[in-house]
Image (cartoon, rainbow, N blue to C red):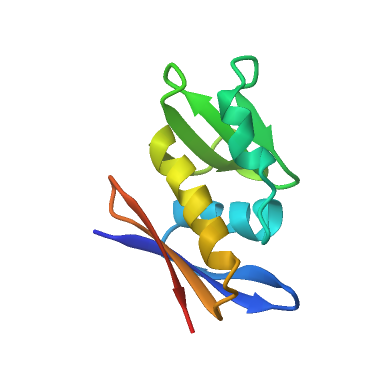
Length: 125
């Protein structure tokens, strides 16, 4: 089953306006509140630093797990018990660069789709 999170351009930024699950809402919060548009490149550049295993903002943490092959996106308020979104590191990097390319065009909506293996990012007017 394909899951998604949807963003709408409001007040000079993309806000997450809907998600199919709490895990996908974590992705929405990451892009809405931490990465932004234009995106803060720190949220992808840290991955290549062998001394860093986590990036975080005010609400969301992004961790490298399982020998630096899996990314976990989690709400810091739910860190002990809450749901976490997990994906291969390569798909996370792909998602970031697709987001950057699409947000430059400023569509009214951006939708991130996850089919369990591959990420897709679309802009819609």
